[in-house]
Image (cartoon, rainbow, N blue to C red; front, top):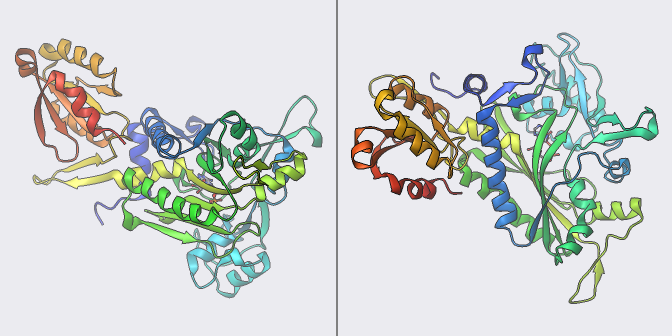
Length: 457
Ligand code: ATP
């Protein structure tokens, strides 16, 4: 299809206009790393602010944390990551590409669930069914090897087993080990939540689909600590809550689906992902997990410090259950970009590239455009200066006005304001809407309220 949104198109638009660049590009790139440019980093920050608003600010009894990335190595023994956090990998013997065995099966059939299969069962299934290599189409694989996803580094001057530290593969442990610190200092009563936005690192070596699978990414995680027995209701609530967050940001309901896990890790009592239909197919955007008292119990055992909560009303002592809601910030940004991008066919037959981003997420809220550079620049700069106190603004005085509109359309700026003689003589200003291309005329002093109302989340 002519105007179909493909990953290739999105990757090119991101590179061309300054959203996202290949990591270390001038050195030929480092696989599965990406750098967010001036526009991409704005979008990412806005997405984080939106999450913060929903999951901390508007969420009763929730507190934010910013924990260290490097944690005591025992944390990762307690969590089960050391020795247990790996992917089942196979190599194609023909073209030498590497694949995840579970993904090969998932892409081939929905009749079996790889999560329920052992490594031996997976490779047997792949061979019995001649599942083709996604790269060369042949079916000739090595046996499965479990590949650890943890990045290791060393602290201090001597590199030995004792100096090993890990780059955290998830944020959650920071929230768990600070459960009592937050509870005590905030005088929080169960149920309460701890949320955190931060980088996580995983040694992903299979192909990434642009920013969908990277070795360094940001998670927005919320852990709700609750009384055992109240967890399942809270779990259902967070499934809905996360979905509403996505639809409010602009992802359509019919491109989101729940994927309930058939196989649960032994301690969990429920788990579900929300998947979005990317141009390459459905992919996980977030996870909601009922983790019972596993994490705090493990930390109690490994640290030998009590993690019990004393209920001030009933005097009961217990280890709270945890309901986790985790969102991949980069995957959400990618979904929003894929959804927003359109090559719109106009009546005159031309094509307009436009990013219909939610105004809250858009990198710039307003572009200030003097109609004729020679006459309108001073006034335009004055207005730009004033508006910049309220919003991220862009300023552009080069090229004809039509071209300037188009540039703002493709970077998602919801409003363009044009400064012309009407502005000089009557303090009036034309505001053009990105999506409808309609224009309204306002007084200069009405502008801030007009825009503020439309860019709220
Ligand atoms: P997947 O099955 O796709 O590898 P996961 O189930 O291992 O993901 P979680 O451990 O639940 O993912 O991580 C929480 C969230 O972090 C995911 O829902 C996803 O949005 C994001 N995430 C996980 N791995 C990556 C990655 N390599 N790159 C970007 N985002 C990721």
